[in-house]
Length: 354
Image 1 (cartoon, rainbow, N blue to C red):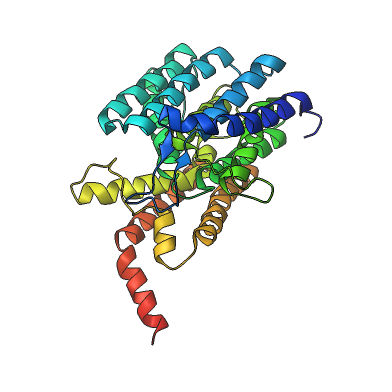
Image 2 (cartoon, rainbow, N blue to C red; image 1 turned 120 degrees about the horizontal axis):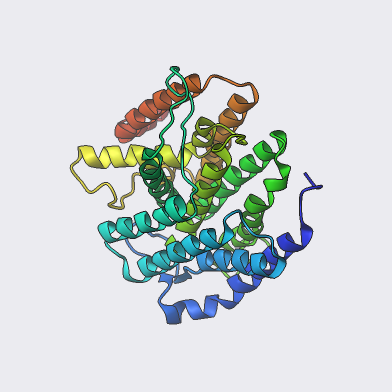
């Protein structure tokens, strides 16, 4: 691994992120990028929402200064700029769900059409041979990109969660690149990792980083979502991919299932599927009596478990259709549990008092 790491770009990203996280905080209030406690938000005081802007700024500036560019770097940063801008506007003005979706599809089109980074095959997920998408791959990619962006946006509910899940996913990708003989590709995910580490230190108020609380905001969660799906598509397609498409699905499985389960629950209640509520996984853990930090630890452990299943399936060449139907079965179970979670929690509490 160390043979492929470029120290200067990683250090540049890290320190650029630290500087931007610190120096952008005083301007957050002036820009209107702050989060006030209300409704579902139970934090204390006003918290800046400039974490995502700092992460993007650090990765972009370090890439320019050190020439450690992503594949299709110009298109990647173009798409990223627009998704970060969209996130900032959403943080400030609370955009409508429909307007946000339209903009996300426009950003996804940059990736699929301009950068030509799109899904051409989903592999042998049905056991009948590899499914080639051909021209429909462009449209399928748009749906996948918007889905992943929103999955990471939705899971960003407690300190450290979106950043922690992103770290797990990116490090899993790095591991798979190394074992597949594509270690020269690890700098792209590692650049994001280097920017996320200082953000998490501030976000979680770790020792030495207290007093400068900051949130990712929609700009950050959507940026990491876009980055992850960009890398996943890049590394699962082509004649010599680093991993199979179903492996990528498992690695980001927890955010996907959380989003799918919540959207299904809302649809059954005839509510808007993008309407925010308190039914996400982190809220459920806290309603069950866990502190935010304990809930964070439990969810991150689940994220590691999902990623581990994907990695083991890739290592042991488990048939793609087995991996696919296992994922679908787990999704059905997850959704069923979610539909009845409050009944289940009441039963557990009742049993505790017996």
